[in-house]
Length: 185
Image (tube, rainbow, N blue to C red; front, top):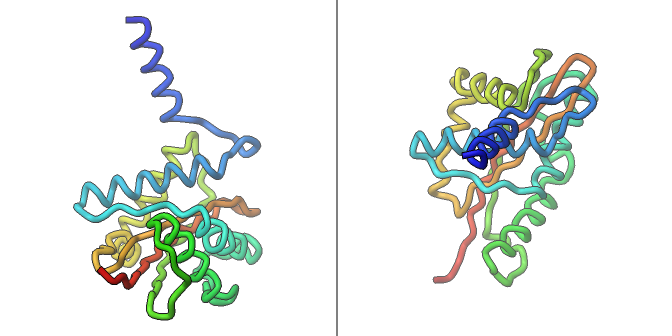
């Protein structure tokens, strides 16, 4: 009985992890936001997304850093930092996951969508914060349309996210990448 109570307390404390500005952990936020979006998608019978650490570094973080730099929530153009190179890198990463031994071919393709947000609201824990962003996007018709994108025509739906604190509050970017890989079966 004591073990069950201890496990419940641990599960509750992990679920509702609190943070301050000093100990805010971007990776915990990223993981929780992706989990919430996948849970939402699964509940709505939409395929779930595969998290890409490379996309986080090459797309999401760069986008958020641009928003923080300009103190403006907007959709930076992914091509301004060499979209083709990003595509090649993401395909190479994905080919490794699929155990495909090949170079980046011209006929494979990639498409991209982004949802971003800003808030100056204060939060008590990661769950509250990620729920806030997800609900905001669900309640916005255009953002909801992107959240509900079905990747059935693509070989995979890859995602990444990043959050950073600017002078006025938090900026977040959630990126969707559809990858179409032509295979000879």
